[in-house]
Length: 354
Image (tube, rainbow, N blue to C red; front, side, top):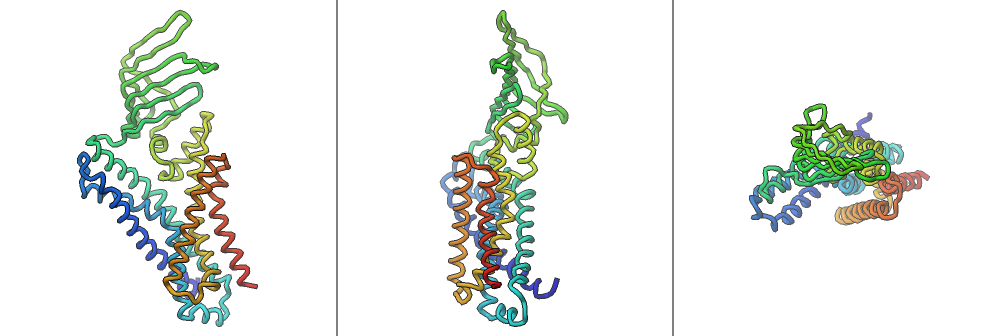
């Protein structure tokens, strides 16, 4: 890689990171202001609210990457255009394609960073933030007080509360016949995972027979199920905050159980589209800089970047909601806005090369 390519990449990446820092700082301020009304509930103090907002920082960084990339690259490359550096590059024989290639490499680097944050940093921090907030407001040691329902072949599972990945409270398992009628109900005060299987404590087994109802109370019961502890986060947490590997595991579980997994497929493809949108935003910068905003001031470039970034976010949300309402394929709902940005950037670059 030549020095010029590194210079263009450093300009784009530096501008994107600076813009990201500003955007995230603003988001943190807004989020903290939104938490002020809950301060004083339970043991939720101003310091706890600050900790909650800071724990959500990685997720805010992940969400703001695409817009920050566009604004930062417009600012960085706009400064090069204002200083006639891009003009000098073109006069020295540097093609538009080479400039776009350097920016694409920068986009891949930024996209990889966004993917790493979304996969390995944001999910754990977001989970910890929600647990901290819930436990403080409701004065409970256990923060995850959300139950869930699931289905497997011939079974319907109802859990009152998921205390942790390996401990459930208020478990009821309905075993159904081929006609969907209950054959047996297993109830337990709690269930725990011993590393290999689920153990139901103090279970009550209600069996429906042709002659009546039989009730058993064994000391313990082994619950054989495909619902593994690592899948519980997917059940009780917003899918958009989860890593791709967990979403993929739960989609396979739902498919094996014959259940609808479109909501989780949509979240999966949205996560996959995120780094691609970063590349698309950088490519879109090239026709903008060499076109209408070449002689524009810094304020105009920032305004244009914010306008396009917000438009992309709104378009993305629109297609996601439309996919849910109208039953569009998840891959189409999640990827179409990103593909449109990529196409706009490529078409703009090709027109410049004519």
